[in-house]
Amino acid sequence: MHFNIITLFPDFFNGPLNIGLMSKAKEKQLVSFSFHNPRDYTFDIHHQVDDKPFGGGSGMVMMLEPLVRCLRSIDDKNYIKRNPPVSETDSELNKENIKLGLKQKTLESTQTWAKKHSSTQLGKVLLLSPSGKPFTQKMAQELSKEEKVTILCGRYEGFDARIEELFELESISLGDFVLNGGESASLAIIESVSRLLPGFMGDENSANEESFSNGLLEYSHYTRPENFEEISVPEVLRSGNHAKIALWRKEESLRQTFKTRPELLTDQELYKEDVEVIAQVAKEKLARNLHCALVHSPITGKDKKKCTVSLTNLDIHDIARSSCTFGLRNFYISTPLKDQQKLLDDIVLHWVRGVGAKANPDRAKALALVKCVDYIEGAVDDLYQQTGEYPILIGTSALLPSKKQKNKKIAYPKNINFNELRALLKQKPVLLVFGTGHGLHSELIAKLNFMLPPIRPSGYNHLSVRSAVAIMFDRILGDWF
Ligand SMILES: C[S@@+](CC[C@H](N)C(=O)[O-])C[C@H]1O[C@@H](n2cnc3c(N)ncnc32)[C@H](O)[C@@H]1O
Image (cartoon, rainbow, N blue to C red; front, side, top):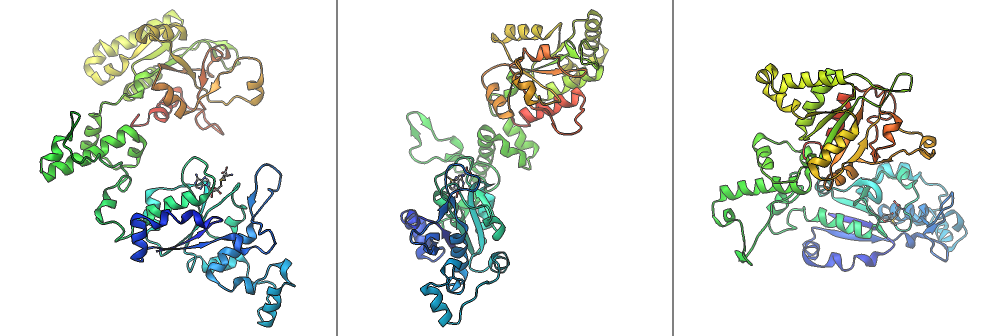
């Protein structure tokens, strides 16, 4: 496999590509590299490769011309001779071209050329950028089937964006961070791709069993000594029973993934047995700290005035069932109206202790989470009694506030996103507050610590509150948090 590396710093690669398995792979001609420096394709005395950005701002941008010449020259060694830079028409180079009969003012456009040549000397062309597609093991596997790969390493603020219109290329990111240049990112790609080539590693199976090869993290490894400071290697690995070892490794891989990268499990085809293994892992579930409240007062009415609304039986049942499904411990329903409280009491009693409970014990389990309070403050006090801490209050709304509303002096809570909320749930009790009617009244919103973003903020989003609760629970906890 051949890598063309486009870089302003070819020396960067001297060490890493000449040690260990990579140097052996070079000797065995499994991999080869050529370095192409855009600076060698400049014609001014300063060999300029960067220029100021249009529109102003800090930093410099990598210029198109040296880069295009550099890339086209990989395929056509005489490209520069055939296509001298416009400013160089009287240069020695051009005189020589005229002698050779090579003077051609305009050759085919780069776009037309790139269409024909991308699969020849350049092969697959990758451009490194923090805005690219995140690089994955799956991409490494696909790239390892290519004969040639060209990697563009950026510097400064990055490339002139038109490079992506000129060449058929894929923009790749190594992760959500910013490096000084693409050289270290390209090394990571080269290494992850090369080690998948047959013959690169001693044992061909190693690559098949590694993290991400089947979408999961790898199981843990151990070597001698068997006991170190009273910590032993798991018994099963010393048993010599290969079937048991294979099963332990499969299960360990599931456990490791659940512990550290639960989101990877979402893309897995799991069986009942797999989920049973995961369920045994003692992991602090975030739902332990999540509680929910359905508020009936103070609410915004149709006329935008403060009001109290009545209970909806469907909401009571469905939110209780969602709370139970996602592992919440409390579902508060607030209403200050005594007749409504009595109604709620009757419904809950029927399902938790009455005839309903006998007919449908699952429903009894869900409805047992319901607690009636006058106002949200009642839920806060109850959680303080239960946990010894005051909960963080997080509101929900179908509407986004306007900038004007936010800039007004009235208190409007800060936004919180789902990652931040999950981080909060690791430390503190959180009460998620849902409104009925036309949403929570501003008087109550002012008492909240944070607001979650609305579901589907643009266009029609008139969900029933019970649907909104289920969607929010899923966005916060998914299947594995
Ligand atoms: C200083 S960075 C430019 C950052 C760019 N202005 C931005 O904010 O997205 C210079 C070069 O480093 C490389 N680079 C930096 N971070 C990277 C990452 N996370 N993945 C891949 N390449 C990266 C790219 O080639 C980029 O053009």
